[in-house]
Amino acid sequence: MLGPYGDVLKRPGALAFSASGALARLPMSMVGIGIVLMVSAIYDSYGLAGRVSAVYVIAQAVCSPQLSRLVDRHGQARIMRPAVAVSAAGLVGLIVAAIVEAPEAVLYVTAAVTGAAIGSFGSLVRARWSNTLSDPRQLHTAYALESAVDELVFVVGPVAATLLATGVEPTAGLIVPLVAMIIGGYWFCALRATEPPVAPKDQPRPTGSVLRTPAMLVLVLVFVAMGSIFGANDVSTVAFADEAGQKNLAGPVLAVFAAGSLVSGLLYGTRHWKRPLHQRFANGMIALAVGVSLFFLVDSLWMLAAVMFVTGFAIAPTLINGNALVQQLVPPERLTEGLTWVGTALGVGVSVGSSIAGAQIDENGSRAGFRVVVVSAVVAVVAVLLSYRTLRGKHTGHVHDQLEDQSVSASAGASVSAAELAECVESNRFDDDGRSATVER
Picture (cartoon, rainbow, N blue to C red):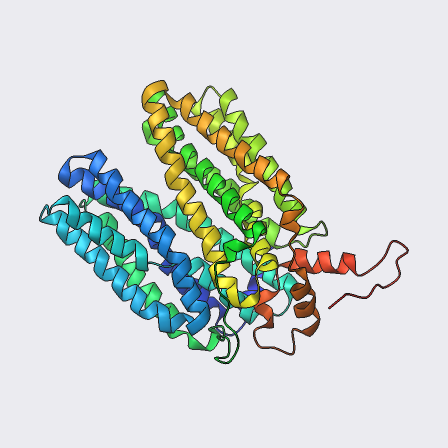
């Protein structure tokens, strides 16, 4: 089953940039909760902790896509080396400010600096895979691998941050991601052989945001709603376990949810699918919505864990297809920016969902939190169904070109999506009678 993953990791430099990218991504899942744990412990204020964490998330959401535009224009190492330094300096400043119990304003400023420069290494890794692999089927497998890595990061990170902050030192939950950021970030940037080429200087540079594409805007909104599902579910599960008198089991239950996603992601990446990409994305979103709606029917933690494990099987494939859709919807020179937008949208959604669910839980208990999960899922499904035709994309022409001419350009692989896109293109190359049809250029 794991053979396809071994094949892609054997490519020169692939294992190194995937591993370093995984390490550099660890702060994504640790810094936010680490800020809450540190500030609440030192300042004895969850309200302040939430505000500082919100500043960090907002700064990341606003600046990460802009940072990715610079990466597409000037190269990964040239932009991310100083960015890692700035983000690390901001995080050091935040830790020191908390230790000396500095005024709130100092916490806000240092949190903003940290978030603004932290970037999105997940999108950088995927861009390298696109540049490294010319076979769309292998690219599909590589994206599945990175989705599995994301699951591990988001399972291990929060648990590690909580254990460090509560069992070692309040600041320890941020010191570990700080070290991971520096080591992983600079290791990744040092791997220049696999870095995607930048566009020639004489090539006209795109203006405006990729969000001007209606389908990309829809995709970002759907990812915000998906993030809200995950954020609200985390808080609601903790509250549900607390009400059952077994709060210590909340972590394992959430880990089961992620485990289902991890298993499905690995399985999904070993197969090649013939249904159109946008159709599978919609199907996955519907399956996820149906699954989370069942959370209302459970009356024990064990039943919740079982339902979550099954529902988790819809997560990774949906995220894989969503990232692949980005490649279908944006031109190759905007790939990193596009991937960053959906990744950032997911993070923003997590923050929004957890905040809304937390407020509802305080007033009405864990069931109210699960209602936020369901509402978020409904919003995502409605958005996908109303924009179903839009998500097919209007830029599929460049995908055809890249599939046929990928040997001509060094950057051609950057616009080739996963195997499903190849299958989509292949299915469109024949008319109803089975005769070969000409792909328009």
